[in-house]
Amino acid sequence: MNTPTRGQWRGYIVLSCILLLALVALVFVPHRGKSKSASGTHNDNATLEELVDLFGDSIEQHAYSNHQFYRQPRRSTPPSTKRFQSSEFDTAVRKQHFSNVVVELNTADTATLQLLYGIGPVFASRIVKYRSLLGGYVRTEQLREVYGMTDERYNQILPYITVDTGAVDKIHINSATIDQLRRHPYIDYYQAKAIVQFRQQGNNLTNMTDLLLVNLIDEETVAKLYGYIQFN
Image (cartoon, rainbow, N blue to C red):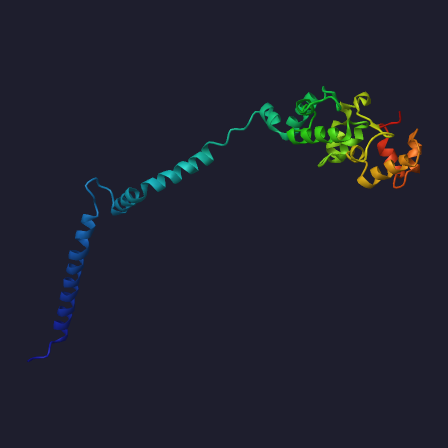
């Protein structure tokens, strides 16, 4: 077999290139032709349409959210409404309402006590219960002794409370029994017993100073009992 000449080799190479170009044309040219859809859009658009079909709801919701956020800013509350809704304004209005109330501690029921700013059903009940134990209030500062009463709460209601000492139930110190004496919050069992024993020794109490002669009765106790003792 004869060895191909240089010219033949060149022919083979040119022929191979032509065949290669033809093969490429057969592979790619049909694909480019099919890249056109019936509507004339490119394959990229067709792919986008497929994505929209698959994820359309999510894309729409996302677009709606962005539209709402950027296109429709939040409606601002009118200044008058803001002022009405603020805690400071509400507190001021309530204080103004309660400032027109004056409550007498010894005759007020729980409903009346709740007219005081900061006094709800619980505190009103405690005030009445402690009043019963005392026999009535003789000083407004005795409200500080009510369980849970803070200085802040007391100072808030102080301008709007009064005390009628004429409504106080007093202790008949020269005739009361130990049980009657010990019922008072300011007198414990041992002090009540000492008072009775002092009387049994033939002593008669005529004034608050005489109480200091009784064993276990100190100045603090005497000061608390002012307004609660009857000597005749």
